[in-house]
Image 1 (cartoon, rainbow, N blue to C red):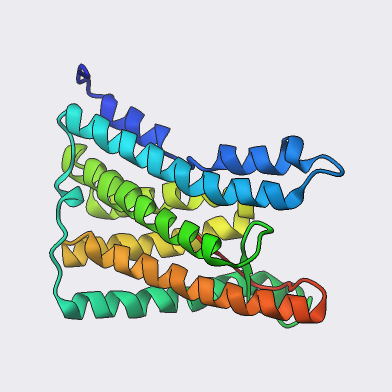
Image 2 (cartoon, rainbow, N blue to C red):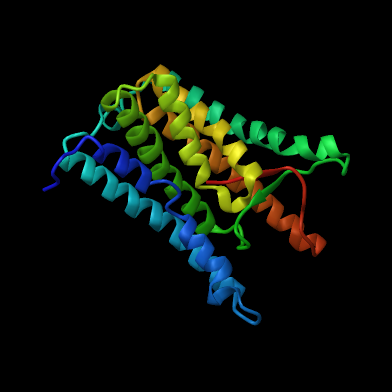
Length: 244
């Protein structure tokens, strides 16, 4: 049984920032990254490790919040009508284009050429495992950053809802730091939109559907990109959408 203190809520939130980064760093700079190492194995480890880390951290954080008596109502609000869910799916798919637009800005400003849409996928193929990983991660991220983070910051710590949405968006975005600073900016944008969807709808199902729709669109683009790269025998560069 946890002994509740005023700082327990903040400790739980801080401990849940970027849970998958250690997994990604380990696969990028650990033994699997040495010359001659099996890069495919490293990609597979990352594919399994990242969603597993998010699920484990989310489950532990929610359990601590429930045991400590500060589980927010945002985690239990799931009722949403069909119009909300349809709108959420449209918004989620549109966020892929919005993130690409943000990613294209630096290339347009420095005149390095016309940006091309490409998808971060950790060096692995865009197969069923990749699709499952980003969808599972989306569920964990919504429970964690919208349900727990916004709920605790707004309901328990009495921060203004706008501050709670922004803080949760940044925490969510930092989880994509491994993809680069630009990915953090892109994901902050998406995180704010997901947070606003929660606030205006009152249902965690709405940002969850939006996030799933975004990642489903990313998966479809990744499959298309994968086929193009195999046909061309090379990579694709340009403005990027960092999935997750």
